Image 1 (cartoon, rainbow, N blue to C red):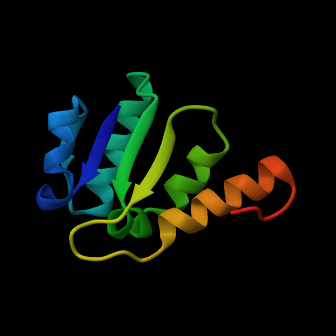
Image 2: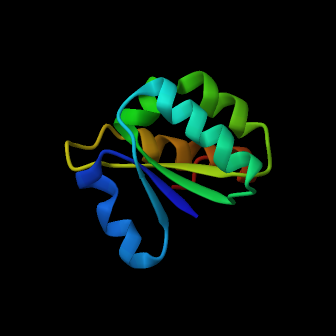
Length: 99
């Protein structure tokens, strides 16, 4: 499992045993995600701000079983992207909005 984003947002994930990567640029994030994918990383938490910069990459990963990429709010605010992604997943799985 890994956490990707600005230092202030993902630093605490290291205490939980996750690999943490301090990334602020879209190209850097794409390269890192592809590397983690080849290393069989199962779950990647990424800040919503950074996720919004790499939408195409996230769409590609949504088609694959692994890694699961989960947008999380960062210290600079919550865009609601993570909750929308969870809601969309529930709708796909259940067939209706139950969240």
